[in-house]
Image (tube, rainbow, N blue to C red; front, side, top):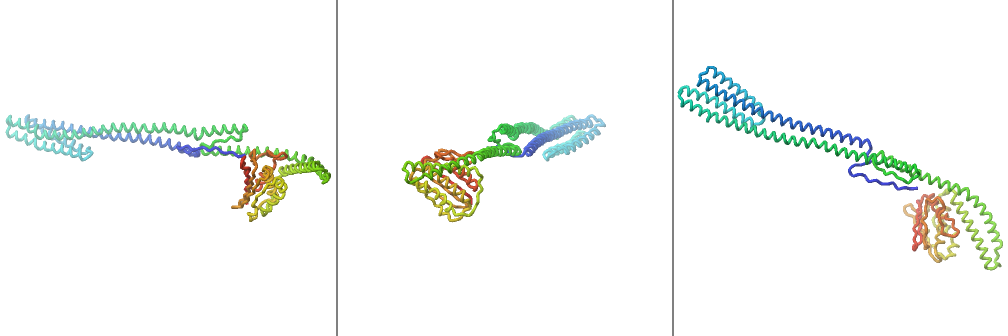
Amino acid sequence: MLFKRKQTSSSPHWQHDKPLRLLLLFHDIYFIALIVLAVASGAYGIYLWDKASKQSQRINVVIQEIYLVRGDLYRQMKELFDAFFLQETNALNEYNQYTTSILIHMERLQSIALDQEERDALMEIEHKYRNLVNEAPALFYRYQNNPDRNAQKSIYQDIETGIFKHYEEVSKRAERLLMIKQGEIKHRLDEARSNSIAVLSLPLLLACVLIVYSRRILKESIVRPINDIMQATNAISGGSLTHQVPEAGAEELAMLSREINKMAEDLAASRDALVKSEKQAALGLLVPMLAHNIRNPLASIRATAQVIDDPQLDKDTMESIQGIIHTVDRLERWTGSLLSYLHPIKPMLNQLRLSNIVQGAVTTLHPKLNEKQIRLQENSDTVQQLILTDEHLLEQMLYNLLLNATEASPKGAEIQLQCALHDHLLTLVIIDQGPGMPFKPDPHALTPGPTTKRFGTGLGIPFAFKVCEELGGSMSFESGASTGTRITILLPQ
């Protein structure tokens, strides 16, 4: 018995026929990639934050150093005033110490500066400071040469509106530059914070997607196929051998499903073969005994009818005797067909001419054809090449099929037997003009088929199927109420 296996479509997002080890490998790779992505995202966020923090600290240090320089400068100017106006002896030493301290701060600022713009601003501060340091003592020495009140006032104005003002302007510009950079760093820190949140949320989102995806893959590749296999095994164990398992899921489970389906097909075929063999065995025991018990009385009846068959008898008696003889012949043919159907067929292949085989079958059929005035059109002579077949089996098969066509055809009809040999394939087509077959012949039937004839055995078509099978060929039927029956026989050569 043949089954059609169920076809399953593959999912677009995943090939479910992959091995389990490959599915697990992909799953592990995805998790490792997720972990690496999370670590990389965190490390990148920390790197950005650390870089911005260090830059901010550096700018704060630069601003603090500028403030320290300004403070030392004011204190230095105070010492200069104390030295010239208050005549403090230690003021000039303090002045020089502040000068050294400011220059140290200047060097530190140059070492902290990151780009050329900062260096230029700090160099300008240092330049203005050096101008102030060089010009301020000259102003005080000039006052010392002309120590009046107006000279002292002039010194204050020159220092405040002159060199000190210039220094303050340069210092303010440097501070604004650093404040702008500080704002930019703060802006970058805010962006880094936002980006870090977005980047760190990506692994969380991917983790959720992976959980949903893994659950779906687990369900489609493992859980559902296992449930289908369990249902199928329960159905098959209950005797439903036609139940098929969908070949889906991982490669191992799909392979297991295929093997279960094949096992079910083999079990069904074994069961059918067992039933067939049991029926054949039962018939094989019963039919020979019936044939023996029927043939002996039939022979006696036919012999008696032939003995009393006398041309001098009246017409009704003669018709009755002929009817007895014909009935006995039909019963004899019935028992012969039944025995030939039950016995194993062993073809004896030989190189033969097709026209001789066809003529052998048609010659035996002539009385029946003449009785119904049926014309038989056949073209076996067109097949000139010898064919490899069993003469008696093929002749008997053709006789049975042509006899069925003759008995099904109306009086005066035509039967066609079309023969062709092409590409090592012998094709025989029998076409009649009968009413068509009320049933479709089954080549795998375990018992004789139905018959439309009053004394039919139903063994003609099964015997033809059996001969085709033994000869490695096939036979098909096409039947219609208005087109008759068309039998196509294919025999490989």
